[in-house]
Image (cartoon, rainbow, N blue to C red; front, side):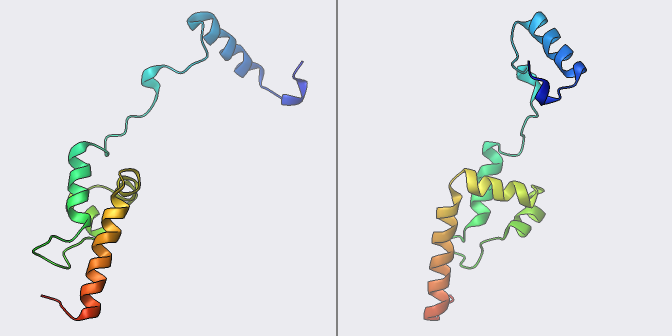
Length: 107
């Protein structure tokens, strides 16, 4: 029937066994790796560090600095920034910092 697929006999046998025992081909709920980095606490920590504080200009941190301060990997910091809409916040902060640098107001 599907001879062009070149399926291994063991894969078909395993699939049939799974269907016989569970009446489904779905994965178990616990078979997925849990993501523990994107917790509310870590999202808040990244959000605080990603942008300059109002009273302390030029205090924004790069993903590498955030990694050093929090122990969260750079790729996870980028994922938090991308998935939690911190990009707009980050761009706004950097735009205001850039404007301050251009105008010469570095207080």
